[in-house]
Image 1 (cartoon, rainbow, N blue to C red):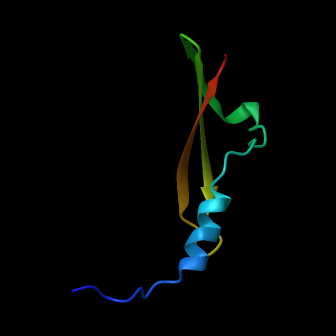
Image 2 (tube, rainbow, N blue to C red; image 1 turned 120 degrees about the vertical axis):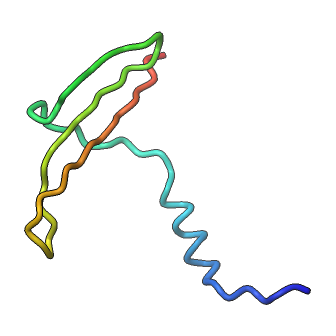
Length: 70
């Protein structure tokens, strides 16, 4: 038995298109914790404490950027 599609397929397709690769904005060096290269991949690890818009509890955010050097 099959059921009819109940989720918005157009919205899902739009979100899939928005997930394309993009060039991220450069992150400030003050948040850079570690940078290393392994073969042809460079890895940068950034860490920052940021505040949420709706509550004042600080959040620990870690961003990992991997770059292919080839």
